[in-house]
Image (cartoon, rainbow, N blue to C red; front, side, top):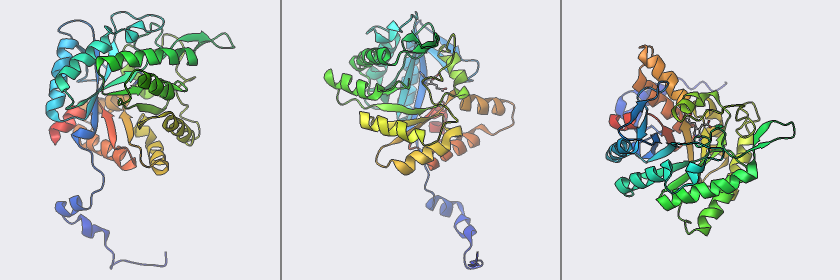
Length: 333
Ligand code: PBG
């Protein structure tokens, strides 16, 4: 460096007091940019704690509607709903039934939210199948079990139509099934739901950070893993750009990157390559549990760590954040 700028340039000048620091801030998040995930199950009066996710619960419909009311009053942007059905089967029939748990939850939530907060449904089969995989099973050429891509597409369309008929505001396909966005868009349009946006889990890695969620949603694969459909964390970072481009071509309205904290490089890359489409990120269960565990031990200041983590996600380029802390953060505002 030939240009010695000190003492003319002093970076500390703009850090001199809080008003100055606020004036030059660029990375914000606010309650209306946050989406809270909720787990809904059948039954009455159930508020079942999720052991690996302190302060998160499996909720029966009557308890769930209380959360919807609170989310509205806190000014959250939306709720993303995961259903835990009474009965699971090979194809996840409950998700394709107008009286299934998710259809009931969407109807109940909509009647309270009335457009003041978005009711979003996760579109996937792992919570509804007895084997815990994200679609219809088949056998691959080695005689091993795998998810049948094209048969699953048919069912995804059925699932999404049920959610749309129940009144969902936005759908979020999360199965990493090739072609899912295009087929869902087409399916929705054909039934008169062309106003419903698709927030695609475009870039979803096969991540160990989903561990606590699988306990919460009772959706762990009984055998095998999700590596033949979710992305390899060690693949080229640029593979994420191909996934996003495909989803945009197929009609995605919002793209999502998941998990968040260990994949900030991917959010940044997406932001640099795709302007004009909102980017969401999912601050997943494992990220939540790690901080909760450390905070419980008194090792970390939970609110400060959460604020810093979400700021990092927004700085990387995510304008929408799905987080289990949505209510806590809204209360700090
Ligand atoms: C699939 C789905 C998963 C998550 C969101 N949607 C789990 C998975 O792929 O196994 C994980 C979210 C989290 O860990 O918080 N329906």
